[in-house]
Each structure stands twice: as structure tokens, then as C-alpha cells.
Length: 246
Image 1 (spheres, rainbow, N blue to C red):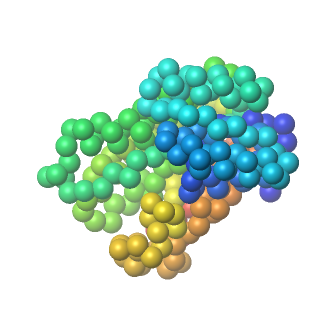
Image 2 (image 1 turned 135 degrees about the horizontal axis):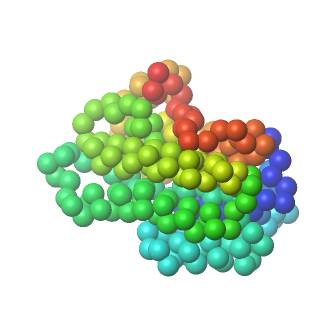
């Protein structure tokens, strides 16, 4: 396991699913963790309390990171309460699904706001505090490499834009020793995409392993990139998708 002792991480959308698994895994590796939520205050506090019950340090922050001031304040609160910020994990996402003919401008704006604008704003704010060894890690999607059918135009658009943003961050922040990477999940068993859901059989059939992954699989990849093993990895994506994009 990566040793993150003495590090401080901010995990967006950390109240459930993949975000909660990431927050717990980073804490298990020794990092102090701040996690954001928009509405699920009870869930966010529960994750923070679970981390603290195992001897870690954690704080839950209410923030809509699509808003510039809120993103800046979430970073500032992390630094104020936990002393610094070394790792930013952009996990908050929007499940954009539907046929092209029914996609509204509001749908497009929402997908780009959550999956791209919030990452840009959080990275902009966090980079001001990061030094050599800083990590910006975003949770993308297997749709970056393969769009298997109809109804995924919004998801593919927003997550592909995240690739360009990450490459730009890698180039700009590289001279300061800060890396920027993406973890692209495949089908992961969460409440947003359960392994017994309506389309689960189809999604499972698209993977080489023939099964769903778990949130902890994504958390393990994030922890690796956040630790010493990720120091020479930047501007690229790590697929954790069971062979979805093979």
C-alpha cells in the first residue's frame, strides 16, 4: 500500500460510492482527508466518523464545486483545518444518459459543469497551495476509450473533455513537480450503477473479465497514483475497467 503519512487529501463527492471508498483508502494509507458533499450531510459525516474511528483525521465540507467561490472555500477550509493540501481527487460526477434527440442545453450545461468546470475550479484553487509532489487525480470514465452504444453522448462528451483538461494541467504544473492524472472506471457496483441493475448484464458482457468491479478497485488505483509509485505518471489515464476498452 502507498504510504501517505503526513499528506492531506481533498476528495470531492466523498459521501458515498467510489468517493467514500477513495476517502477511506487514502486515510488508511496515512493521509488526513477532507471530503465534500452537496446534500448528503449525514452520509458525509458518517464517512468522516468512520475514518476517525480508525485513528485518522477527516472533515466533511458542504460545497457545490461548480461554483468558483465554493471551490476556493473548500480548498481553503481543507488547508485551514488539516494544515495543507497535497492531493486533490476530483470524484464528483454526473451520470449523463439519454438519446441525442432528448438532450437539452440544460443537460449539456449540467454535465460539463459537474464533470469539467468543477474539476477546473478545484484544480485552480488547490494548485495555489501545492508544492513538489502534489497530485491532481480525476475520476473519468471508460467512455473515454469506448462508447458501446446509443444514449451516451453527454457522458462521452464531458469525460473526454476531462482528458484535455488533465493534459493541460500536466503540462502547466509539471515544472512545479505536480502531476495530473485520470482513473477511468469501467462498470463499478455502486448505488448509481448496481451490479443487479437493468443494464448490468449488457455492461458485464463488454468487459474481458465478465464482471463488475468494486469501488475499492478504483480507490486502490487512486492511492497508487497519490503515492510514491505515481511520481512519474502524469497527463495520462489509468483504465480500471476489467478490460472494457480492450
